[in-house]
Amino acid sequence: DTAVSQTPKYLVTQMGNDKSIKCEQNLGHDTMYWYKQDSKKFLKIMFSYNNKELIINETVPNRFSPKSPDKAHLNLHINSLELGDSAVYFCASSHGTGDYYGYTFGSGTRLTVV
Amino acid sequence: GENVEQHPSTLSVQEGDSAVIKCTYSDSASNYFPWYKQELGKRPQLIIDIRSNVGEKKDQRIAVTLNKTAKHFSLHITETQPEDSAVYFCAKAGNMLTFGGGTRLMVKP
Image 1 (cartoon, one colour):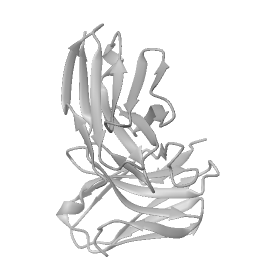
Image 2: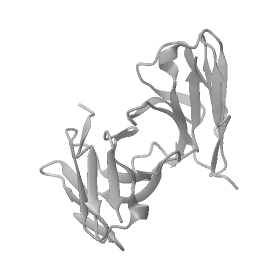
Image 3: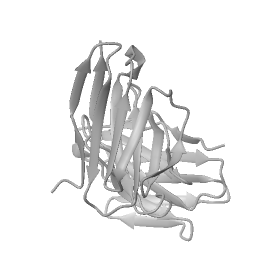
Image 4: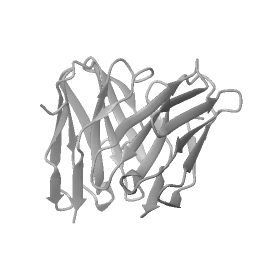
């Protein structure tokens, strides 16, 4: 059983389209995250949810909207995709806010905007 | 600030040599410092972590040291092997994990 699963693994789409990435964890964790990894490999936090509530919203364009229907799921919807959105997006989860236990990452979604 | 500085950005060693990666941070409230290994095309995976009540932790060929006064921590890999080749990230915990910029380690056979 995959602990943190993301779909799709690859996503190629045109500028201006709207797309969603889904994430599910079966670890019983109560906090989930979205990270963006750019071409230089920097891992940057985008959002964090604790028990379905948004607790971190870094400087991310409002074209990005996370949704957490329950604590095991955290989805990411992106409107009006731009070339600069091309990156690998990682979902992760942890007990609490990750200040004592590490994160478990999903396998990533490689988004390519053309 | 919340930044974590990581050095070097690339590191090339001969198989069997040791590798050392260093990180510094500015937020003195951090108490948890994990290290992640990311192989090409894969997810980052936790390899070792250290908490502020200890100064050093070892797990086989990997060790981490932490100096809270100086606000730096390091990853040491001994007897490197080709399968150690990957990107390594240090991180510090606050209300989330903040990652260093990564070190690409290449171990030449």
